[in-house]
Image 1: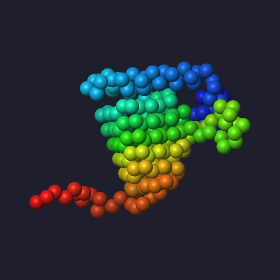
Image 2: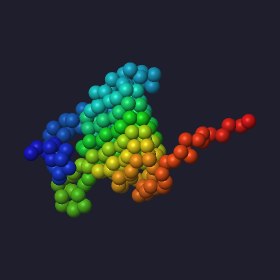
Image 3: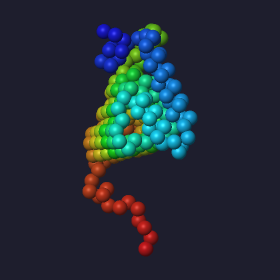
Image 4: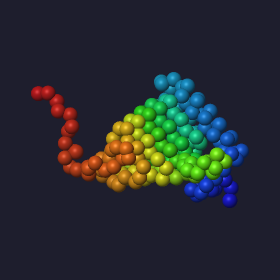
Length: 196
């Protein structure tokens, strides 16, 4: 089994194998190129994102600056939006459904490092995939940790640290992130009260 196969299987693997660095540099160059594009050059940005990410739906917009380790392990569905300074640590797969909105300064980290210092100092790690369902809003400065699944129709409050799975149809917030309440029909009422 190759080191990449171990990584994709969630097994402990050696991060120092040569092809990993080559793939990381290719992604870093694409992130750099993306971050240097003019805001008005939407076509160029779209082309770069489609080279960088493994799968890209329709109507996808990612604000710079973006950072990712490999890119090809990131899949985004239709109507995806990520605000400034999102960081994807993606030795494991990161999958987003459709209609996902991500606030600024969010991190999605699939890499685990051993607690044991001897293993950690050898450059060993393992990865846990992250999955985000459809119709999800993730507030700014949120961090999603390895192995987490966030369901569909979910709101994650700003500043949350998501350490475990979040079910469908809920508002969740905090450190560690926990379910605050279900999303109900009351939430369909207009939230903005206009002056009369």
